[in-house]
Length: 278
Image (cartoon, rainbow, N blue to C red; front, side, top):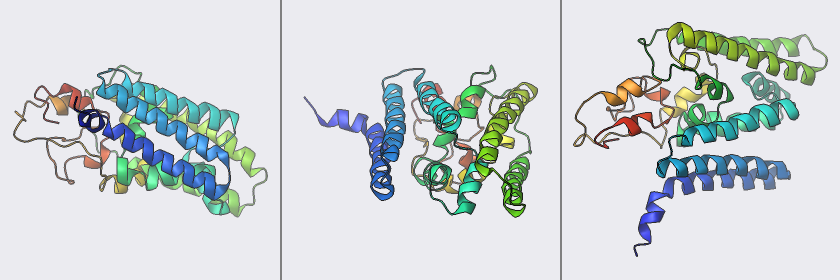
């Protein structure tokens, strides 16, 4: 029996689990807090499980990861532990000079992590997209609009909001952060659902509004994990472009390909390719 094939076949989930486990152990030892060991081990196991299921041909592999990680971060970390995991929480902890909670989360998942897995956060862990992906417009039914500038306005507004809290010495800052987490999520869901129906595109919020993409896009350009096209197998049928929720031209292997930093590694193009060219 050839024992090398299974390792090659399941190498990617093993690699990603090892990467998350390395972060888990490093933070556990550095911070002397077992929470980080549990937290990143859980996320690593969830991501590895999803990739394993995908390799095994499961149609719902990505959805499994979305709900395992998304509900954990929204319900447990956000609602139960009262941690603001939105961008406002990141600014808050950053300005207080504390490398905890949201700052660690952003560093791993949204600032340095994308050098390895690009916009994988958006495809597998975002609790906003977790709900939006349940809507009926999984395949964009209208051309992409030039509204991406809105995300930068939302990014600036979140920064200004937290800056004002510090400048005016607001009391009960942690309580304000918790309530802003609740209000922000409700607003994101409301706007996201409204845009999905208005533009007939589940991912309209991600393309035009989400402020987190301001962090994700620059690092995603250099991502090691990318969808690549085998030009010898590709027959230019266009099916990959048709099913891509983020309008990425995956047939172009250049890092400058159309909407290249928008790829969320959802693998819909891989599943749709009739020639297995991706």
